Image (tube, rainbow, N blue to C red; front, top):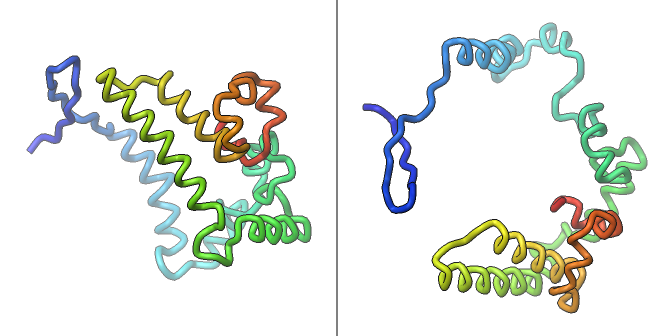
Amino acid sequence: MTATRETRTARVRVREPLPRASLADTLAVGATVALPIVAQGVILRRPKVVALAESPAPFALASREKRAALSHFQPDGVLVSRGRQRADRRRFNQTVLEAHRPMHQLAAAVTAKVRQEARLLLDRASSLRRLDWDDFAAAFWRTVRRAVLGDATRDDHELTDSAPARERAPAATSCCW
């Protein structure tokens, strides 16, 4: 049985074969992913093999790579912090995000805003019989402005449409740029 994927061009369905990995690709994945896992021990780790690794874990809390990638966007973020500073920042984040509660106190209000903007976007797409990037992006930013900065900012495009404005925006929106 041959695996295929369907694509649509206008209203015509075209069946194309799925791309296949070459032998070289398969060997590369085996050598870089599977072999190290087997060498370290899939379930029970082999300490002598694990000790050869350059770092204790690729998912270290503030590895050099993670700090380099994230420090530009969140130089004071918990993910790039270490030691006492990380503990303090994490405690602050947990408090603000209300991690002790099953649902943040603002969840219902934010969800209502997201649903309202999504409904307007879907209504527009239905009437035009298409959904394009410009319409989606406009709805996304309206939602971000409302959820992060309040309903009064819904149509204030200057807040999010220019680079200087984005640099002044709260850190909560940095995931979006």
